[in-house]
Image 1 (spheres, rainbow, N blue to C red):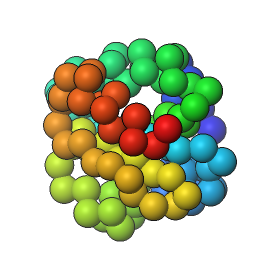
Image 2 (cartoon, rainbow, N blue to C red):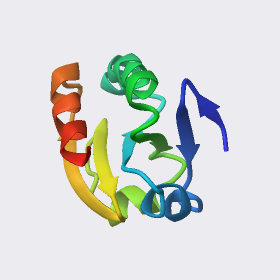
Image 3 (tube, rainbow, N blue to C red):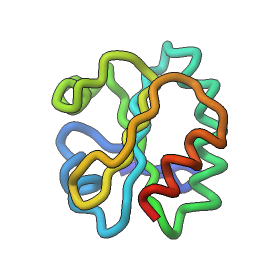
Image 4 (cartoon, helix red, strand yellow):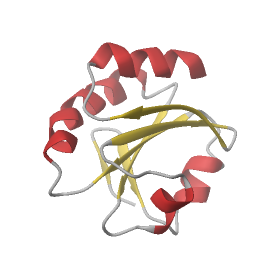
Length: 110
């Protein structure tokens, strides 16, 4: 499991253990290498991971390499951020949005 800037990379195979069974809320960034808006939002997510890392688990899932999980949660466009707590989706953000919008969703879980 690779981790960069406090963000864990997950796969279809590790998603349930890393996200659904996580002891704290988890924010999942569904992204792809070719996605411009995904690259634009990545530094914001990394910044939030440094600030909220003790309270929220930050996770990235590459949709090209792992198609089952996005399909399972109805992810049709990227970037999509899904916030999970206790195995349930608490919030969803689609597209490259301002930092304040992501923080607003994170606050719901805290």
